Image (cartoon, rainbow, N blue to C red; front, side):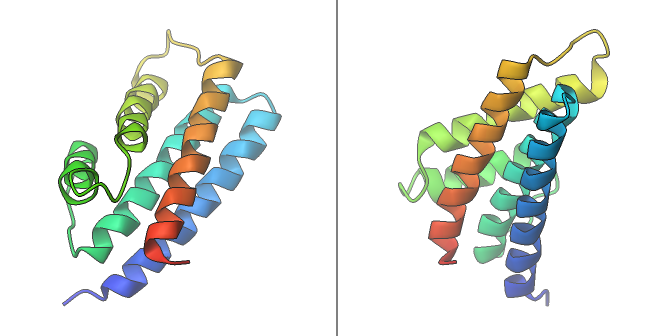
Length: 128
C-alpha cells in the first residue's frame, strides 16, 4: 500500500522546484524550457491533489481527467485552473516535439503565472 502523504509531499516539493527552475530559465531567456518546467510544476501539483484521493493516473491526460472528476466537478478547484493545466500541456508538448515552434517570452510568462496560480490553489487545498 503506497504512502499517499509522502507522495503528496514529494509532488508538492517537485512542483515548487520546477516552478523555481522555470523562473530562472525565464530570466535567462530560455523560454521553451521555462514553459516546459512551468507545466511540470502544475503537473506535479495536480499529482499531489490526486494522491490525496489515492488516485494514480498513468498519463498526463489521465491526470487532467481525474482533476476534472475529483476536484472541478465538486467545485474544489476552478475550471479556469484545470483549463490552464490542459492548455499548458499542449504548450509543453510543442516544446518537446515540435522543433519549428519557438515559445515567446510572453507565452512562457503566461505558463509561469498559470503555474504560480495552480500551485497556490493546490497548497490551499492540501492545507500547507
